[in-house]
Image (cartoon, rainbow, N blue to C red; front, side, top):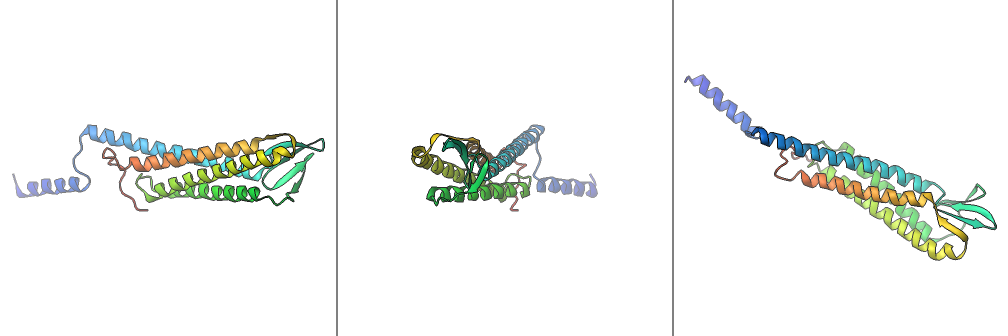
Length: 210
């Protein structure tokens, strides 16, 4: 065997090793399967996150957290306004639990937006630090929304339940709960995708410090 053939074989071996070594067809197929799992989990997290953000925005901005009867008229209220016979006015009562609910819902919106932004701008490789940060932000968003909703629910039952007749929670309140659950689900899926990238069976999820 000539010297140039030996040098070509050695050079080819070094190149293959530098790119990750030799892989059997089974190993390559397994890598593709796990890569697909990572991408599906991140895709599911993004869908849940977008849905959560939309629902949380609608819930926070609309005026149907509860409905009730006031002096014989149909009335409803949200976090910012109350409406009687479809005529809406800013809240005049200074109630501490409203302020807390508003603050936590706004923080939840910021956390959900930040989590989605980090997820979208992260590399497609599962080990990106932005994937982990996005998952944590989405989990925090869901927790803050749950905290806001729990405060509003508990205080409404004890405060407004004694003042108004025929009151009930309405669709803005319900959408808030759904959005909070979706934000938590998005965070869990995002972190699962990040954690899965560290499995020995997922060589396609390479380190990406972006």
